[in-house]
Image 1 (cartoon, rainbow, N blue to C red):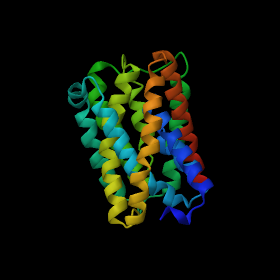
Image 2 (image 1 turned 90 degrees about the vertical axis):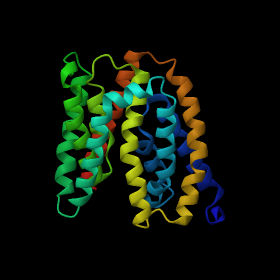
Image 3 (image 1 turned 30 degrees about the vertical axis):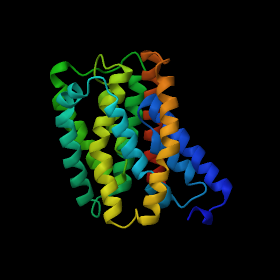
Image 4 (image 1 turned 45 degrees about the horizontal axis):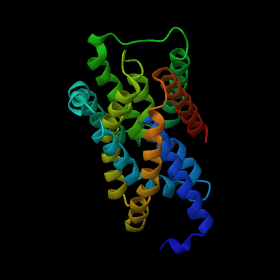
Length: 251
């Protein structure tokens, strides 16, 4: 079935998927943000998005399974997990009536402003007493925005980098747990709407191979990154996410 695509297209997609796995392994975020635009250079955008369905689910389940204190992550963030599910359902329901462009512009500007703030000496930190209540708010917002636009990450990243004392490994295990509540329903929706058909389901399954290879390399790199540098790299991802939302709004 892959014979319909030339060897250079297959090689480019393999490279793009490896890059996506690498950034996921190193930072815990950014796979679709990097991989989908790269593959969309040689494939239809909808196809590039569908191919990422299975690798994104596998990568997040893998990273959460690797977490040293996964039960503690569940105990701390289960309200956020549930809020994402509810927010996603609401977002999908209002997709046909909401002004997506205005939503993306407002959220994109807010995300960029927050990234700039967190990169300055005026960085915000959530008090311990507000971590769970704030998680419900940010989880619901992430689900709502993701259900409308597929951008689940920015609000979750904003939330997690505001929690005091969350080191790089805790960040990765937490974001992976929270992403599962977003990407599993998203993948099921792609399948039910026929976007992820049998052919693309096969391609998406095969795509887990290069993503996993990149993931393993990225994980090794993460251990050599200091927590301070990791924070600034995450802020950089947040900036790119905000810019991507604005780009999506105007295109």
